[in-house]
Image (cartoon, rainbow, N blue to C red; front, top):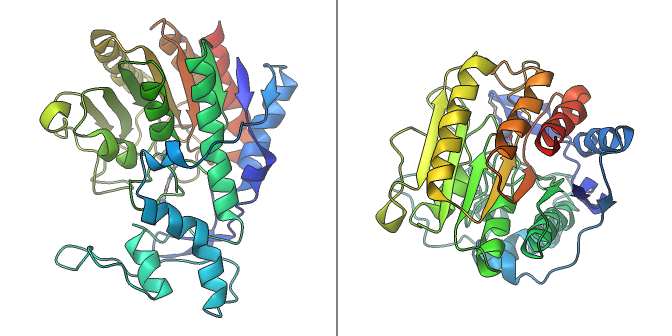
Length: 343
Ligand code: Q9C
Ligand code: ZN
């Protein structure tokens, strides 16, 4: 299995995030990617290649053009405004009865309009890294469309919390959604996206919620007690043509493999019934017992079992990296999953 990665993805290097009501050291940091690369090399997992370049078109099939323009122009606007801070935080949002149809001219108003949390700062090179991360996912999708049986897109920044027109949860472009759409546009009739990150994939769910051609499944911490809090409940099943093609498996804090793996089984059975042409896995390792921001209890060896179970589906499979913040163990947990799949 080939891995796709560009060093440009390291250029997004946040210092801080707002979490638990205070400023904390950033968790989604470049060393995450480095740990995975180091482990892939240590076990000689396979070739690591640079992503191809793509026009913005495949990204614009998922994201609104004004949002992408905002992301790509942001740092220029920020500095033109006279701001000297090296990272920008949103801090005001258009909730409920406030207007979302008018984009403010002012930079802080724009930041709030195009985001949903203060945990996702933007820096001088965020856009470069974000676009390259999406191209990493797109390269994986292109390889699958060209006949590969599997590929690993080492995406960073991650993507599954990003919606059509807003960022958050460390995510800017929804890499998995962009890849799934690319696969649809290049021969796949049906695509399943299985999100095994600890957090609900709210962005991916919302993007495909009314569609029958992309099935979305997510195993995650119950949003009643965990980020992203406002999406990911079991009763969210899709709407219109998309009804029954959205499947959520919210689980309580403390969930161990014995319970988590039952949701994995159920998800796999639903994928088998759906009969997709290709599987996209939103691969988060933050289900790990030692993850600093998460509350599930998976052990390193159990990541191999995830890979093994997914392999039994017998589908062409594109892995897209999402979360995982136990940096020291991230490489092992990630490569364990890929190794389990390959055997
Ligand atoms: N105490 C991904 O894994 N912070 N994003 C929540 C709760 C945001 C995670 C803080 C976590 C975002 C891709
Ligand atoms: Zn996560």
